Image (cartoon, rainbow over all chains, first blue to last red; front, side, top):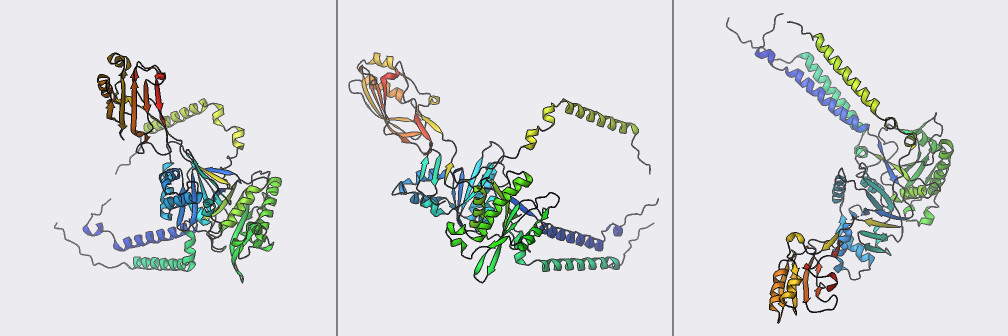
Length: 190
Length: 196
Length: 197
């Protein structure tokens, strides 16, 4: 069999075929990416129903409004101790909540970051179980809750629940006390 | 023999050129069709947090078969203002005839298993709110569903699904959760459908 | 161009290796106890546990378990013991008061020694107490009273720790700080010591 000798000309890539190939690839990727977006399905968020009983959690996220979320975890106890000198009446629950709201309210970006950090801290290593309670005012669109839950769903160590209520319920709480490592808040108008 | 460089005349090949032209034509046709298919508001549906706005604007759903009781909440605009309309979609209790969600939705519309909240429902005190037509519909439907699930499927822990327009007030979702938890045979969790 | 052919022996070798591995796998499966091979019926029928549900009446936000810290002499920093027998021999009537201060690093800084009439005992006590270093959970003034001749119970050594406060650099507000060994005396019974809190 005779071999064709490689010359400068037949070694060069044919320009037209190259453009052809590039366009085919371009069209393929554009069409497939659009198709993938179109065929997205719905996810199912399993949300536990609330009980008319006292509850326990490690983190309480109180939705205040679109821009403000009160994040209460055990560090709230430290905050209460540290800034207790600012309180005129140490038994005034509303003043305590105002103090916590001042120190522990997050904007959406900070909230997403905090949730990501929480999720990261619970992957692997020592198994810690966390329950996150989300309180949402009744007049607020429910997707404020689901968008928080969506950030929590795929971690086996995280459980969550949501109940209705606004920050005023907490402010007018009859009981807000700290006992050791526990911060207890009674909701006046659940 | 001395080698002689061959200088070929550079020219576009006709067949390949037609190929490219047709490809470009195809690309523009397809992209134009996609532009027509969806405006900005529809594209928003596919974002991470948004939920469907209307029945027609839904993306394709693979598991479209209705297996649980579904409460679908859609916006309702009347002369009195904007409110919420609640549909109760019933699954089939016979294994042989599973019902698709869309069919169940049309059936709910035909059988009038829907109700509309008054426009000011968000301001109603709890006692009045629970007496509104949609709340009564939800309460009765869930109670009946629990009975049917137990009778037909022997299922002691039925599941209720909620599918709602993204701006639906949490008050309605919370009411559904309360009804589920307050039933004699409590439903420990509900499903909220969200778009991925 | 010659056609390359795989030698049949190589194929036989691979076949034999595959068969050996399959056999080994079968033996291993056979070894597994029956209980582990199939799910017991009760497990197959088991439903996932119901989720933890939130409460609407109140919430208890529970933090990590509290730490209990012990404020005492840090034996790792080699404090010298106060030899009570030596003190008794040196001065039978010794009555010495030491005013000190525990700094943020736990060092016992001696501010003043009241040893009027008992300089030898005073010097010895000063020398020993200078070596005492504490855990860093508390800081503040501390007083030691040494009374050698007294026969009254709990009066030979009195330690006044009323001025001590939590050292926030090392002990958080909600950590529990307990008092441990606040003196290191050899030859002295416990019932001769009183801690004034």
